[in-house]
Length: 300
Length: 263
Image (cartoon, rainbow over all chains, first blue to last red; front, side, top):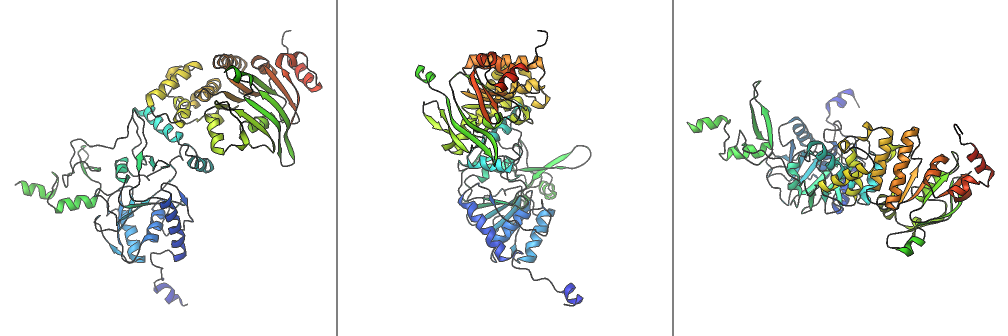
């Protein structure tokens, strides 16, 4: 092959980058994960053309479940327009040529880094999480052999030791993300570093939820309508984050997960929806927040 | 209950363990009764720790059986239980106090969490009650209540060892294994720890199997003593009897090698 050909001819990728045998292997792991909700299924994660920590696990899961008729949405911390989301979306645009969207309701597959969309997901949708550390017991028990045994025997006293420490140190359960959950009363699961605000959305969700950890080579899953209960103490029950008297500065939404945006050096700030599609949809429907450019216009 | 007191808690039959060709311990037989303290003494490499690890199901012996009488009065062979049952025994009915506190404690979580871990493993989900129980136990092992939120790595060696004891006793176990619990402590701290163990044994009616190379510890704590050499039990009997009138040459050597300062 001449140098000219090598440099000019686009390499022929298989649909969605991974070869079919690899996809079969990953689908088998996904099926096993669905059959045993919350159980971490080992799988032979491949090297992906992106660094670990950028969503190599989620990308492999997405590549394996994606079909030609699927419509893909990718979010990073709730937003469609941040680096991670944009690069993964471009990756699949190039290698799978599927339709892309930013609208939650239109998507059939949503890959997410650390948020669940505000809009309720439906039966025909699949949510794929990027997971850095799938083992909820890891920070208290470093041995993999031991944590596997603890999962096998349902020995989960240790996870409460962590919550106990939180209360002893901070006076309340200070874990705000990667908040451990009990799945179907059997496996304790790390819901990936989503804020605990999103934990209740996992419970009995209508959508299929898949979790991929590329570096740690684990896949786990929550089939639709699965019981997902956040762990707590009787006298310190589970609560989600709240922003009392706070409205989104752009769309005026309340009771959603907010990002704080610093406006200047004088300590002024504003809160906006972390879910960019939710915020934009509300704005297009005519809901406006106090700092929205159209807001003043309307007030006049 | 009186009937139970007459039956052994632990019954060891022909226990042998080999590491490949190498002998760990051979043909060990003994019964342990409720409330009894048994000391296993011998030099390094005599198979004491191997025996203790076999008894506590941390290693499965090559040959032999150990029967444990549970709270319902049934006597089961430990090695025929499932691993799940063995692990439940280890964290409820039994305790294991290790020579190095860092092997028996979680060094990076607070003292209170260390004591509460077993309770949470058993399904206690009330923070306030767990904390009260932890405070109660810290007091029993003479650790100040205001240290409850401190990590064990900020504790002295003697305090760490006492914390380890509290952590093990919080579920009211019936049988506690101790592997050189006073090793590495200075003499006055040792004396205080031995005092504490003696008090807890009499208050709680614990059965203890303690491995030590220190005959003074054995004499202070134990009712009965077992002398091991080269993996075999060479002499056993009441502690005072064995130590005052040792029959085996090796035991005589051990007893005569104790330093008597000022006598």
